[in-house]
View 1 (cartoon, rainbow, N blue to C red):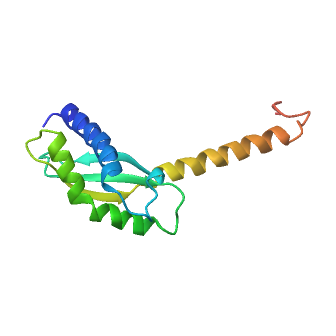
View 2: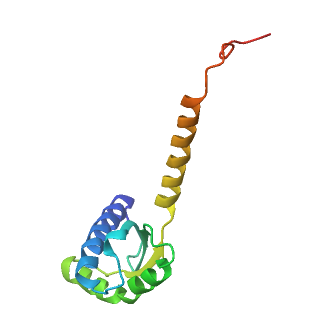
View 3: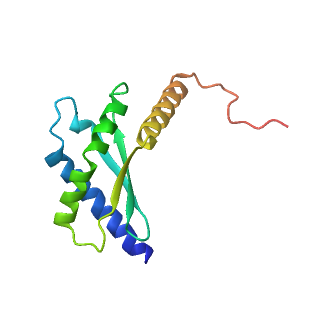
Length: 131
């Protein structure tokens, strides 16, 4: 299958899954505002799709929240099938995506380094090359 088509399907599924979460997740112990669908990776035959989700904060509850997402997977698939016409509706598997969190940590480290650099007094010999 054309890679451009797969990319469009992945993006369409990402948006639809995000919307479906608002309709499906009615659990009291599930903070929907902390969940972001970051990527969807669909197989070439459209039979399965990996759904990568980022869960901000809630470090102790991530596994429970991920389990609730997996439990609601069939209902989300049903909504996708209802809203999107595809040859096959992919079977969804939800996985935790830590890339956003790692990016935040990296940006925090960079800003800390910049702050330390700006607070450090300039050395009069800095920038000169000695031979």
